[in-house]
Length: 217
Image 1: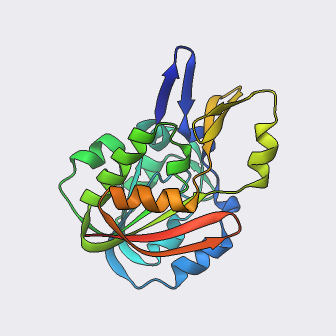
Image 2 (image 1 turned 90 degrees about the vertical axis):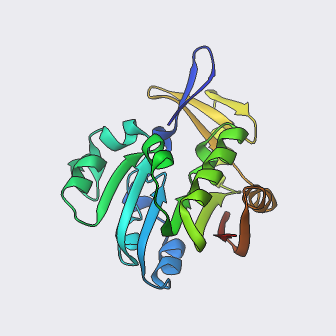
Image 3 (image 1 turned 90 degrees about the horizontal axis):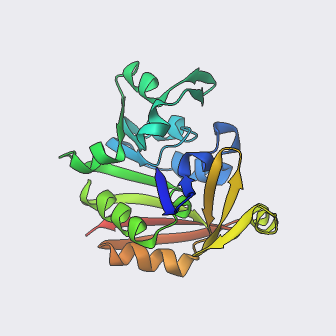
């Protein structure tokens, strides 16, 4: 997604997407312990770094992100392709933009929102995302939210000349444009999720990241 902060400053969230090689082993262990469900969605799928793990636990998976992220050619799961193209070649995947997902009249058995809220520079937009996720879960279904609240790389990046503070994080201006990196404290994440109408089921902290399971009330 692109976020216009002020004239000349447009945050491109796709710049923060990480490849499969930078996935969290701790998260993969958590995912491996989940029961099987029929349907799930990955809100903010990025470069699909956890899609193989999600597919191990769901029969079908919806990949949701900006149209830019879905249609641009990049290395995905070791192949130079697009998210749209991968989805077209699979009978278990479907790709849709955030706008398409908002309009979709369907509820899912499970949701994932992995390190996505922390790249959104507007608090109101984060609330909108949480509401969208909740409305696309079946009653009682769960979503896993993951955010970072401590990161040594972020500490280093804050001190760079091309870094500027913004809200609960900072902006980085590079050749690819502006990126935003937020650090969301666990209590703040819990409050955000509860205000959006979720019931928090479990919160785990590991190596500077918060892993929160919440269900639709």
